[in-house]
Every structure is written in structure tokens, then in C-alpha cells.
Length: 254
Image 1 (cartoon, rainbow, N blue to C red):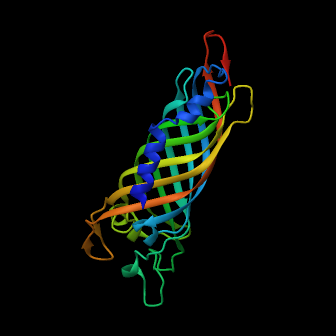
Image 2: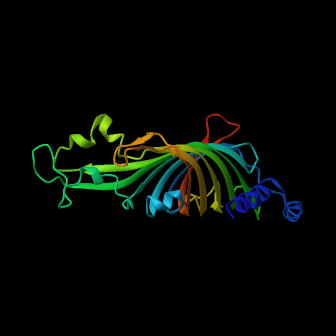
Image 3: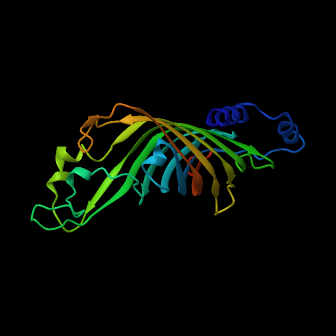
């Protein structure tokens, strides 16, 4: 199903629509300067594949500087994302828990411990806007990306010291996982020079091909060498800060 979705998306991205191009000839489009368009977005995502066995739904914050070429709806850019969620579905600490389901700290008291999901994604995107009016950078927004994906279990210990989860010991429990991921985005972008409110919103799909970066899990007393398929899909909305390069170098539009 995912492979078919990616194939359809790629065809839509690279195959121009003759109807759309025929509409463009009916009126003169406005010339657009080259510019650096920085997007700041926030999204809510659901896990799939192997990722859904470890974590629940999560949130994602992105910063994405994108460069648009002169009078073009094509773009290339970078993206850095921070992932976080509050639901961890597995218990990586069974060998540290006492008979009454507690963890003893270094001062021989019961430790207060919580677990959260953390991660990041960084990579490069290419994008295209399919416009339906004279603004070539407003319309259907399509993006394809190749990224590095990392995720792990974050242990929050507020009141006690747990040497069992520090330094090299932590590496046996945090399930640090990483690999290459693919990203597809489809949505709507509103971007006009004369507007002070520019934004985009849409759906994003991520396919991660990952594996454990720790190799050995202490709680299982076993090596973790299995390849994983970690999926994320969700909705995000972003605000755009545009900076245009114009013919007069003393003028900058934003």
C-alpha cells in the first residue's frame, strides 16, 4: 500500500499536467524573484509499522529553509525536525524493577521515573507548487525528501539518582534506533509577496528503514540486529518567513 502511494506521488510530482499548463497560457503570470523561504511548522503524527509497537502518537516541530529559483515553482531545501511523545508502549526496565514494581535509587529510596519518546529527522527536500492562478508559489504543494531518522526512549528522573541509567548503562535501555527515511508531503501553500500572512498545511508521510544503534539490550540479555520499518503519518501546519532577492541589491522584501 505504501509503495503504491509513493509511486502515485512521484508520478504526480514529476509529470506535468497538460490541462494546468494550458490554463497558464490564458493569462500572464506574475514574475517571482528568487528567494529563501523559511517554514516553521507543527504537526500531530501517528506511528505505523514497527514504530507503533514501541510508541503512541507524537508531535513534530520543523524548521525548513527552502530556496525558490527565479520565476519558478520548484524549490530545494533542508529540514530539521524534533519528535516528541508521551506514550512508550514497552517496558525496557524489567530487570531493574523490584518485586513491588519500584526502582531503587542510589540513596535507597524509590525513584520517580517517567519515560517519553524523543527523536529527530534531518535531510534535504525538493518541492513543487502546482498553481491555479497567477501566483506561481500559491497552490498545491508537493514535497519529496530523503532524511536521517533517529528515535529513542528518554528517561526523566526528577528526584533521585539512578546510576543504572547513566553513562554506558543507559545505552542498554534507551533503544536508540536510526536509519534512512523517505518523506512525502501534499497540501496547500499560500505565498504572496504582498501578503504578510503566508502559510502551508497538509499531510505528511514518513517511511523509515532503521535498525538498533545500540546492538545489545540489557533487559533482554540479547543482541538486537533486526531491521525495522518505522512509519509516521499525520497533519502539520506551518508559517512562512520569505526573503526575496531582487535586482536592486539594496532592497530586500520580507
